Length: 383
Image (cartoon, rainbow, N blue to C red; front, side, top):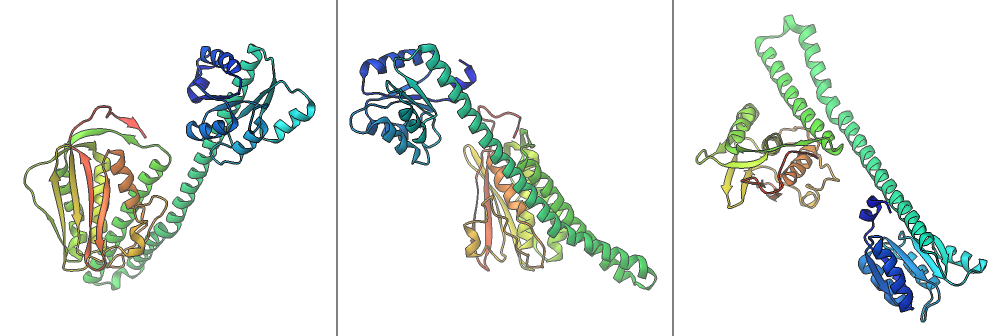
């Protein structure tokens, strides 16, 4: 038998009230490398099938209590069991009996006494068919997920990338056609708006590119040891101008250096998004505090603001990958919800956890953890 098929099937459930038949079938299948489970009546068969979810069922028709046809009908009525192939084993060979077996949901019918070679060929055939159906279902789900990701990507591009580019176009046209009439202050104001729009568009593009790579399973995961304080400091420098625009103070107490073992690019994306969100939803003349706390095996980073907070109706779904919660910032800044989606996935890929605490109009604190050292099994891989 094909070794791959043996790996894909967990157990064959044999249902027969005759102990000698059970022994013969069990020996044949055991020699072929299958795992075996047995039941001696229909009631036991249904209970056992629900417990072990076998890959295939060999079902005797003539049994006390409920016969094989009734057992099969019962199995096919249950969502978790209906796709398990059932092969009937019986001495009954009338056409009407065979048709009834197929009508009840059986995939094949073997008459007793059976030949070993025929039995194994039929079992192998239906295992391969079952595995092929499972693979097709998996591929269909992957295709549906890819199409959904594509639709979400196009939707974000259409709504959230189009507008900042249109604003840039308008500003540049204003400067081009009215350059001689614009004062120095007017020009400085226009260039500041161009920079803000460019920064926002660049951040959005970075998130979209990483998110699309993640959705297409095309991300390279390369954990290394590095000092996370350096990443935090560079992020503060990156967003200093955005914070100054709203007179927000970015606080990070620089003391002991903290080393983590994670993918550095992913961690930069996590911190960049959390700090950017904190600025976006903070009120003017407030502060944002970034803190690092060491543990035995994990390190905790927190980003705390004094801003708008998360609405109660959004708390349960804000970290759900199936939802992109789009909310404008306190300065009417635009967002897509992609950033938090990335943060959650990247934290979990690095063996950490992301969570938050928030109260409306009092602010939010987002926390995440990362391992402080390499653990067994950690290595560079494609995700």
